[in-house]
Length: 95
Image (tube, rainbow, N blue to C red; front, side, top):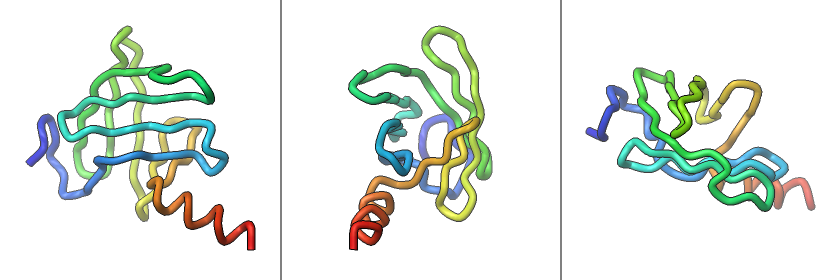
């Protein structure tokens, strides 16, 4: 079981918006690192998972939530997909 997590959902990995502007890495140690555009580590902090619900606490104290449904991460107003799934969709769109 991963630190701070009570879920069977695998959340660890890179999650990316369809346009690739926002990239959120969820690490196995319960930390996250979010890049926005060219700004690496725009947001960093910790997260916990309960069921399919994520609770984020930024290193500055800001809090946010997320939910995973059908292998899609809904994080506040963002929709993020696992990096490999996003890349596959981009390739299909270009065909």
